[in-house]
Image (cartoon, rainbow, N blue to C red; front, side):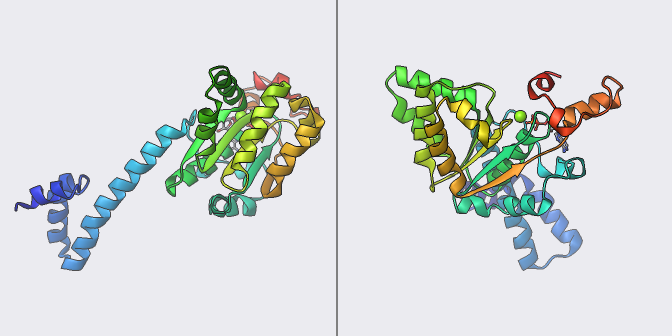
Length: 262
Ligand code: ADP
Ligand code: MG
């Protein structure tokens, strides 16, 4: 059988188009058989890996992708880099632990959630990103259409579920109940990353029910890393540089709702 036919049958889709170039390089570098085989198989493996990451990335529905390498930690000294290093080693995924990222708007909560989620995708895990609002909308619609189980299952199956922007909108009791069902199903099975502009004491307001809020926090916090970012908005920093705003406010004076649209 021809080599190209054999590669095709073996579905070496990434090696096949590179084969001539690889052979040429091997001749130039005077590679031995073993090193050539290593190069050839590495080419195939890298291609497959990248394809897998791209496929998982499409399914994850990230609104945009930013990485940990793109995060300026010197701008947010309240973030412990050791904790980020530990999270990016992804032990939390294997242990089905959660991450909660708290802080005012613009401090990089979504950026960090996506960056950690992206690490998980690269390592072969599945992920899904949703704002709390869109998640609740979809669950409510599913309930009205009598298919809430199937919808819940879709949110339960990813190894890493990112729920962004908890706290901007309060939930009614039914919505909070659906959210509680989802978290109960994920509890100790898969990791959930939540970002919020509200501190835990204010979560009762979000759920309109202190008892439910406590039960939700209980499950979320049992195995959880909390990042509490106490800093200035990165978005505002850029504007301030352009002279559009005055000097930075004191941390407690940051008014989340005003800043978000800035
Ligand atoms: P939040 O979710 O807390 O409101 P985002 O994660 O959406 O904030 O961050 C707002 C914008 O600023 C994004 O484009 C993000 O990439 C960028 N950003 C925030 N913090 C940093 C940082 N420390 N280094 C680099 N970019 C940052
Ligand atoms: Mg955000």
